Image (cartoon, rainbow, N blue to C red; front, side, top):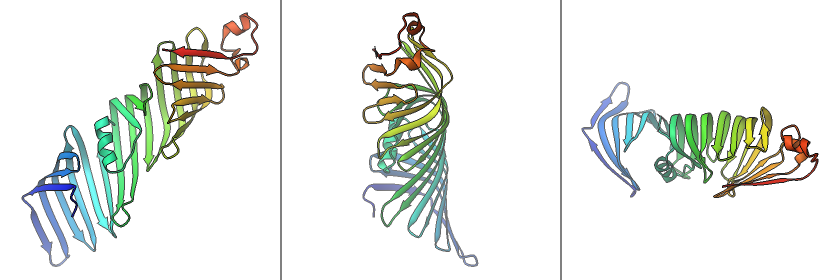
Length: 276
């Protein structure tokens, strides 16, 4: 018995076929409360038990404004396998729900369009949860941990347990004097070790009146604890707090991109910029 789970189930239709030895049931509606998640409405539950395999097919689950479609849950050898589909955004409310099931996602999405397909395996013996979420994001405002909001034109995320694999994604940031557009070929977010690494191309990196770079290949590293960013090829370090501090290491790399360096004959030095 699970003390965290409370349910109300209505109008169960139970059938057993003596020839095929199929046990099946139909439930039009069920209302479930689990821990701090209240009024989970489940519609059209169809259950089959055959050859020691228990399978549930659910048309829809609704929790407030969250809608989850085409859910399939199976139980065999003490492993619960769940697949589902939803177009919900990764709001703080949804992330809190996922954390109830020990699924941690460091992304907060304020708006946008999603297509999410999830596979979740739960081992009843050791309580281990394996997750595999495929997320397609379009035209979204997104925040990573406590970073400033980034505009995501499109992104493909493959979330497996505590790692997020990124590919074919476009990120934009426009604020004050800093504008950037970064196309990601591939990347990884490691939640256990608190870092993000990406490989891609800056279609635009514009520090107004100072640096203008276009179509520049760059490997990007972010420490998720401090939100410090390192651009390896350009030798740029960015610290994100309430303000944004930018440190440019070797000015010699920037002579093609900073007109003033050539005008004033500057060959060495650093640049420190604070963006409020």
